[in-house]
Length: 285
Image (cartoon, rainbow, N blue to C red; front, side, top):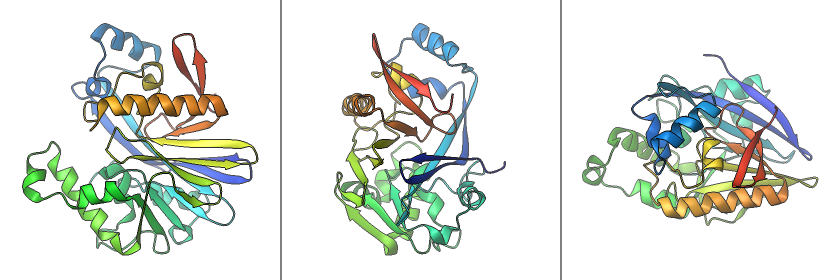
């Protein structure tokens, strides 16, 4: 695999969407991304979006926001040490003209391994040595305080153990925040629980334009058209549905560009109102 990057501007901010790689999803797992859907409706949605029901390559798109004063990375990806399909963030940064040492802030939207493990090398040293890592206080406390016995009863227990290990490794560079705080001038976090209990999103505003990084509040554009469908592993599904709708309203009202972590690369687009809710307009077309 080779690095994939997509540069774009939000006002005076220079931004880059960077693929950390893909997660191959098979026929058995794919429908679980859309709990609450009827089989016939899901088949129609797959067809309209050109998705094969047999296999899907789920993208992992990190986001760099360069305000001029700060270089802010939203999520650090999954890294190459646990998943051979991931780990393209660092070479992607370099192809975009940045070194890992240039990053000032890493915002971790939640504690899942494909979002937090790319900042830790195999020897537990820091990939982003000069970066302050920012995470919601409740999210951090939940994941690092999980006991081994509790984890052993959970699905994907090895994934969770690895994520917890990586989170503990970055503690030396960690700053805990409350959702809603500004992390740099023009860049603030948004409370967006549901996928996890303390999931956060990020909004950047410059020159009258807005960008909302929705992270895992919606995994694919199908979730924009069908807001009641949700991944089966959402911790608080009903809360997640309300969060998703609130973010979609915010994006539509502000004509904000949104960035989806798992959307088709580069993960960018606009939310438009439709007769029965919202639709997604990819950017670039």
